[in-house]
Image 1: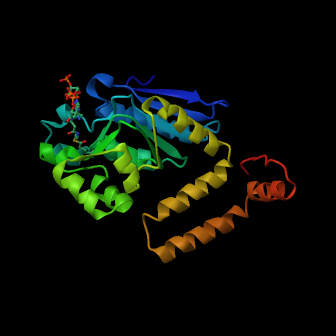
Image 2: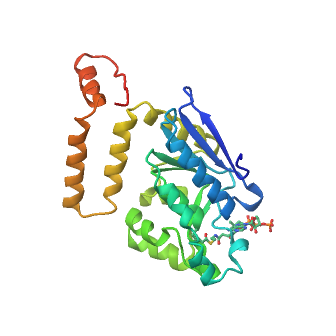
Image 3: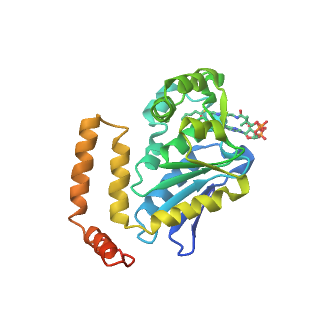
Length: 260
Ligand code: HXC
């Protein structure tokens, strides 16, 4: 059945970038169960779609997403959240093997910010606001906020945001290292798609290894990470695309990737 709370399009000149738009604007894209389940299903299928080289997730100019759906959570009991593995679906986002770009306009709050942080690259519109306001509603982040902020920006800012619910602007988020580039709001999605197209030009096999290597930096020691990187680098020598890339350079021509 077609999703109702997200929109999935194939975009870019070669239609090799997937644009996933969170589409529950009246609730500022609050991430209810249905939306997250549709998102998980879509991402899984895009990850397996050979025509797609990168995925962009966006919302609208007012909100990327204002968090998990508070109205849906208000009467929930501990036994239910535990028994039904509440938020279990969310790991689907960080499990994607292809690069995922978050294009954040407007509010990225609570679970909305955590969703952006599960992506590989965050581009922001100049009016974007990032934060973890859970403390204001008597809870704490539940989808990585307390873990990814300190790893991506350091402890002081992480603590400030998590303990106060203060928000940071796009520029502050960029200065802190959370966001790689800031654009005028109306240019944001186009720029994110262009970035996706640039990634989609590369060998999908090698892109997958490169993403895996960078992500390991957040999971392990430097020595283990460098070791894994070396092995993955060695592994590129088992692919035709590595040989093609180096041959094309030597022969002064553009490489033709075969994903083998
Ligand atoms: C459910 C939400 C919502 C949310 C906004 N809405 N955020 N509904 N869950 N997280 C709804 C409002 O109820 C309202 O619906 C409509 O969207 C528009 O919002 P307003 O508040 O009227 O807009 P505005 O005055 O511009 O304020 C925007 C805002 C505010 C500052 C973003 O909406 C806000 O503070 N939202 C909650 C942010 C938050 O606390 N997020 C963390 C959630 S907890 P009606 O029907 O009245 O028009 C969380 C836990 C994470 O994420 C756990 C892991 C996932």
